[in-house]
Image 1 (cartoon, helix red, strand yellow):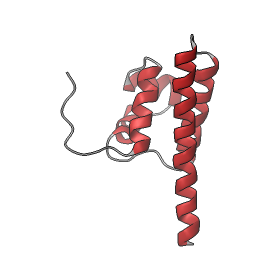
Image 2 (image 1 turned 45 degrees about the horizontal axis):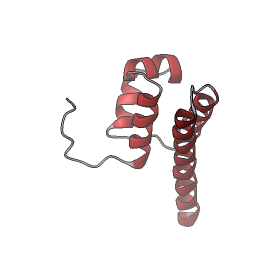
Image 3 (image 1 turned 135 degrees about the vertical axis):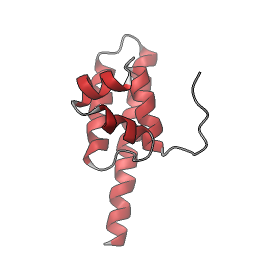
Image 4 (image 1 turned 90 degrees about the vertical axis):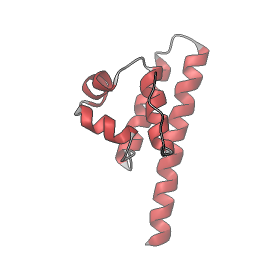
Length: 101
């Protein structure tokens, strides 16, 4: 049973968790085989430090690639929605930076 979460996660963290779970990967598997990074990176992305910048674009590409190999329309739709989510978060981040420049 999942632990209760007392704080709300960022949208990027929620999308990453959904992507990882839709791919059927543990944090360890996702970090090692998909991101080629340390498990701590995925754990931080999912909890305290959501992915930002280029990491969002990388996750969008991973979701796109997963959509192309999905077994059915429902899985494809999930991966395409997640791809759009990562791209939208990236765009919002970039717009915010432009407004403060």
